[in-house]
Image 1: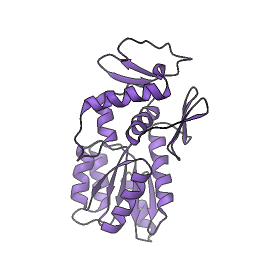
Image 2: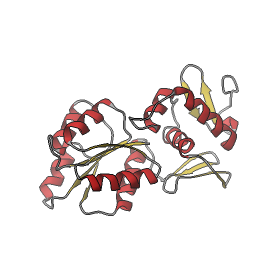
Image 3: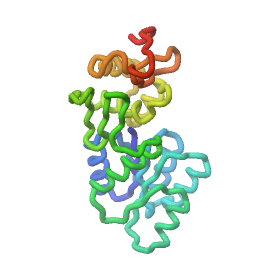
Image 4: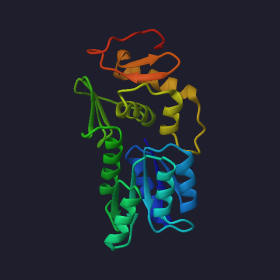
Length: 230
């Protein structure tokens, strides 16, 4: 899952980025409203952490521009202001949640996870597909109750597909959501990660849809077709 942080305080921005990175997210950063607006407008994010008191373009204006342009990614606004009207302005501009500074990073992470889950239509922190489970709080994967050890990129691919298990996910979509903007993206690596995942969670759990991408299935419910799955 890929997150954008728009925050002008360097230390706080690095702290949030580090915490979200440790929690398994891919993180891009912007130090002001103009750069934040550009990134949010031109890249695909699963959620945004947006400070309201930004230089060059304030957070409410950034959010209003995104929503006017049809951008629907969930947004958590941050504010050091204690006036209730500022929080209301953020929510009225299209924010999905807010935190007032100072805050605990654990709470921010929990709120970001909740926003990502709700945006994908999930209420529980544990995503399930048959006897495959992904605990998004602990970044833990189990099959039939047995833990499965994944690399960070394998986990990101699986977690994204599990969040969107009801549809086919293209390679390009996976690339956009598991790498940050500065990473040298190569679609061939997605095939490598999917191949590794199949060996670890079961060949029959990831269905290839020729020319379209991949789909997580419950083999006990959906017949698995081996064609094109290699």
